[in-house]
Length: 148
Image (cartoon, rainbow, N blue to C red; front, side, top):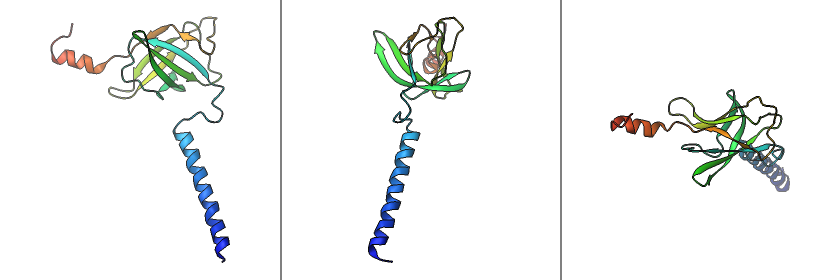
């Protein structure tokens, strides 16, 4: 086999490898490079989102329907922006809650979709929210005898 033919075969395999790695990085990193533009962006304000991270799951009835895109501070409250898959309907009386998987698991946002007539539009804000229980502070209060 000539050197040029061998170099060609090696080059093809290197290109296939780079393409596969790029695909995996996009898929595993949940990047919105292709097909992510039609997702619906919704916001919610919480008193506390301790432990919630960007990329955390957003679920309805235990089914993942989106993820947390951004967490910022709005005055003294946390403003959470999340994206929802197209086709998922949320209404004006929806409730967003920060929950924990198990006793010491990851935090995620759980949404109760509500049932009012007014459907939330992209960029809308969920008004009813419930902050998660900060288990560490509760345990600290219990240990120090400050439980009321």
